[in-house]
Amino acid sequence: MEAWKAELIGVPRSCNRRLETPLPPPTRTLPEPFADAWALVDKGEGPV
Image 1 (tube, rainbow, N blue to C red):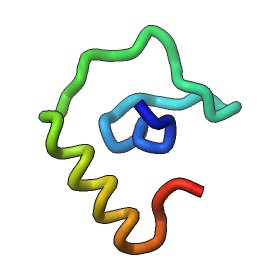
Image 2: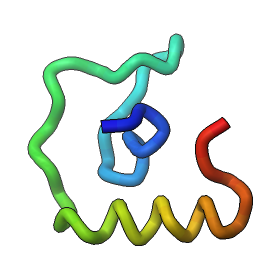
Image 3: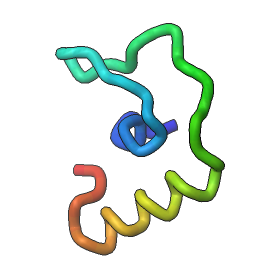
Image 4: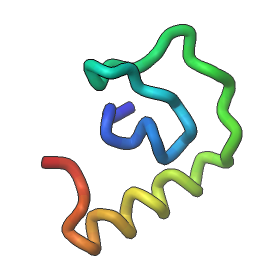
């Protein structure tokens, strides 16, 4: 998983922007984060 998508699936990140461990179980279906990520890219707010 790309780290910038972590917040889209509800995975918390620590103050140094690393993923917290252990990862929680997913709370969303697989297509949902992809749709949200695509919307961010469309708006120019995707990965840098």
